[in-house]
Image (cartoon, rainbow, N blue to C red; front, top):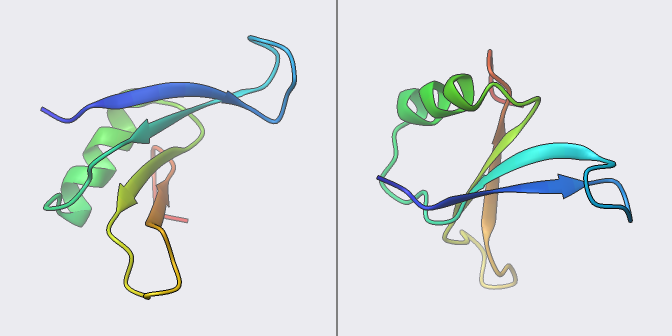
Length: 70
């Protein structure tokens, strides 16, 4: 089980933007598991927060649609 939030982006009004799922600790998930989760949410985008691969970054982000990774 992974903690995730559904956030409203591209708006300043609640419920006025695009809903996006954010999986907060996606370390250890396989590509297939991320794709399955994105398909399950059925949102236009599901994002996965991961540890950074660069010392200059705070995090790494992968983005999936219900059908494929962006």
